[in-house]
Image (cartoon, rainbow, N blue to C red; front, side):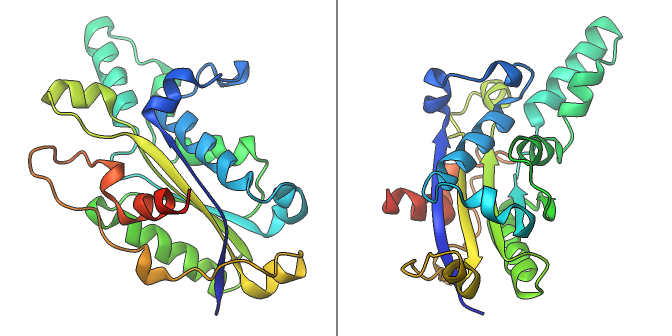
Length: 219
């Protein structure tokens, strides 16, 4: 099956410092904001796409670190105050960011959360490819997000945060919506694992991923 790249977008921790967060996002984590903003930028390449193809669009979100910062906040609060704060617990789950983005974009297609260490970019893309090839969906958002400011401070290492998203689709489906002149998505160019860095493990720098670099090259 031929896949095409309809859109791409990224969002960095530097962007987060100046981003005007919507009021309804006041309880969102860093991962939620960065991931959702990167998806917005990817969809911005094809205005109106999600309104036309909502039911046919899936989401696969991968994060090597997951919501580690929120998990740390939950455990620190539990230890110091002996109170298990429900919101922190809910936001500490691996699929919390996936759910947040799905709700924001009103996605009704299949959604998956993946966390598989250094192989996470590969596993995320392969999941999206399988969904498309099996006909579970006809377009798929693929997002990588890494947010770990709190833990980076604990280990006294600078580890790049951010999110990156691509919007993939079957070539035939894209053409049926009027997107005939779109580049083919070559999986081999995007699928490399995260590079290993023992000094920051288990945290990974999103800028080190081939997935992220491919988006930078297209901007």
